[in-house]
Image 1: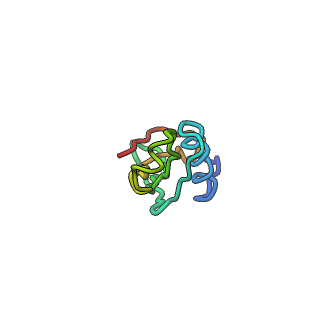
Image 2: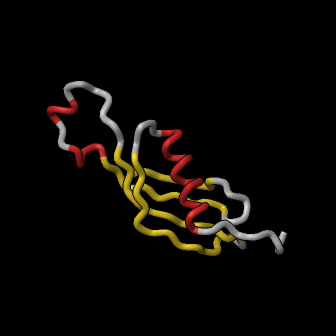
Image 3: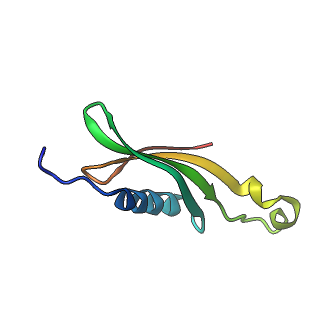
Length: 90
């Protein structure tokens, strides 16, 4: 297991983006922080950014400003196995 190559930052971001867009259809994710950390003896990409979600209500387009559909996210991707370990939206 020690000789397995780690994902690049770009690969980890693609995995994270695919995960987020599968959960929140027709959204756009933008990363602001991506760093490789060691947590519980595992190497993990810890990423942060903003996700803009499409409004589904007809009235929402007129009543809400665009910023109200934008959320901060944090997501962690296992750097060896390429799977999302944890994420949160705020």
